[in-house]
View (cartoon, rainbow, N blue to C red):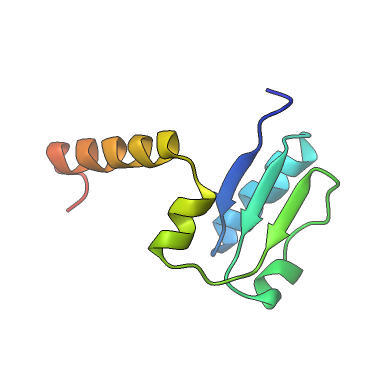
Length: 86
């Protein structure tokens, strides 16, 4: 998995904690936050890159690949089928 990178949308305290946790363990990730202030709260790790641009649906899909999009649609569908998404 060395050539792979996790894409994390972190707009909450939990997102920052997850980024910090993964970063300390050497996981390569790219973190997207909405503001420069949000970026300033993230840990500085050599294996973490960050962007602080607000994104619409098209921008999110462009940053992601089709496999991820299919995966998310499948997950969302299963959540709503089981009634967990209500």
